[in-house]
Length: 269
Image (cartoon, rainbow, N blue to C red):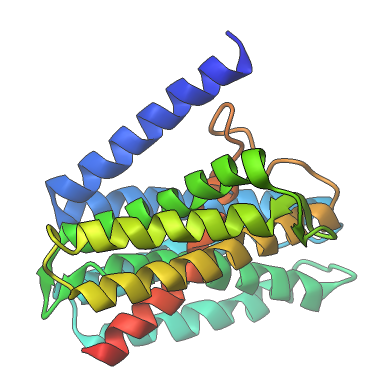
């Protein structure tokens, strides 16, 4: 099986699972992203080990997943606001555990353990939260988010391959170009205009603003993950998704864009 076929099959299955989970129910979407959070945090810690750091892989992954679930369950209305306070002592347990590791770089280990939780679990939790309005699950909000993100990525690839000449951020990602980024942005904004006719949870203006936020912050998220991989000299974050790399490779744009989109939707309400 060549790389293109492998990439196509993996991508098709990946999109099918993601879309079906979002459209079926809030529970299937929440549980799928809980699994993705767990795998993503573990993958991040594995990469951190290549940098000579020893994050608390097992404990950090468990705490990140629990924190994601607490935020998601609160968003769904199943737990009280006060239950979110559990995240605080759980996060500070990292210091206590590190006391017994006898590591020569304890605070680097703590920093990377916390970074994995904050960088991955929090954006996925906010991604879950942005699908709710007044406690009611609206799958079109998350579906629209991903469609706009994919439009930006696909447009950037096509326009970059055909018209790309001016490097966007050559030091971090030599293949990214301004022409591709602008082309992807135009495609995403156009799709936002079309979606606003069918996904009525947001106004046309809001969908357009969300698409612009996704284009800008999604590209920055991609660059941030590339910066991390380049710093430890790896090409892909993992091998979980044949032809596509790992969880971080597939969701890199989400880690920066989801918090910005969530904040915008929260402030406009």
